[in-house]
Image (cartoon, rainbow, N blue to C red; front, side, top):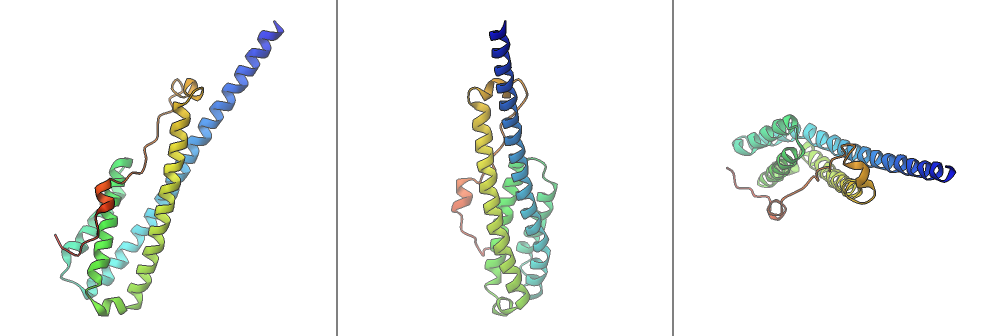
Length: 182
């Protein structure tokens, strides 16, 4: 009887330990997503100022300005990660295209406000890339854990589901920003 109680205690302790690791990993994924969300919000907060600054110099570039504004709204409304990731990639390209368009306006490039916005945008983009890498690392660890023995014995019955990567399609990575307007 003592051996069976000891085995049961060890199994219970191992189960609690594995469950707590799964919960910790899932919470790490959620925290990493929150970090991405904060950085996306920072970028979204810069977009109206950037659009207004460019509009003052390049008012007829309406297609580019409208695209950036519409993508910002769509991203705010997106509820699922793959949809949000796709919109954010389009937003990244549109903002890059907006900056490329601005290169055609020497007086805009010389504008102190535009230069400051461009620097802030570069900083935010760097933070987004870091947050995205951290998030995808947390997702990789979590997904590996819930699919690996012995954690998978608890993960499936307790409803732990694989998290989605914040992925970029290869074609999007290879596209260079273009000044061509739609």
